Image (cartoon, rainbow, N blue to C red):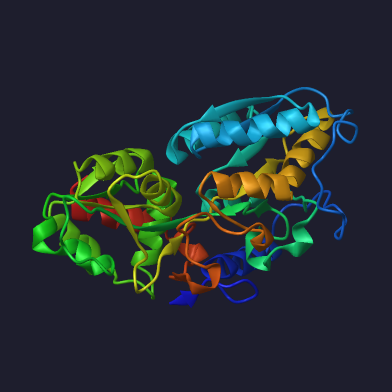
Length: 356
């Protein structure tokens, strides 16, 4: 169990440290980190006027929220963008297919699969960059010495419908109670990067282990492809309870839906959803990509994240309504090997349990 506290060892910091060691073991040359200590201000149009062309962003994050952020970036810098959004698995498949033909159209990638980003980095396909303002962040948010950065925080927690569910739920193992048979749902790790991260955390040393998933299978757990579907269906009462990302449950609760957010006693799962620049970016678009990375850490952008319901990486802008203080959040530890060399074995065992 970990306290998620700036300056202390968190699940993300464990990953960041292991990624750095992995990179040191034999990766490609790193390019172009910016100097630290620069003012954390929004990039101006004058600063980015030499950035040519549109930048292309591939993401698995909610399209409306990403679009709001990119539109604000465009208004402040004059830099236009193209956006491809799908589930993490689909985004990765698209990148892999494009790379087989020579190069991907993506300039920026932003999704919930830190293991895949590390694989790209080991192939020399990530351009390391340190955004302006990064010196103010918890080191846990920097993966592999500038390979990728967390720009806001997401946790997988539990939500229940207060009108349809009178079952007491305090921790992950409560989701296997007979009263929730066929009434609990989660995202499928075969499709969702966040769900796979949750699997990694819950079968790891701080979690309840594989017995949780075996008991869920016996209890007729339901699966959805996305957190959005989960949140909609728990709010409507179709599901009594779901495992879902915190900001969606919190936003639904704040908007008046009969949804209660539950932070598991043994620890939530921090979902790494970093953003990175690919090394295949055309030279004339590199400045624009760097401007987007810089923008994400500005207070303007961090405040937008708070307005969207996310817990920011810059604590000075506060937290969303209904969010716990960051220092009170407990997380389970994540192990990089489970995202890389152990990934296939974990997915295979999951498939065996659920007959996929």
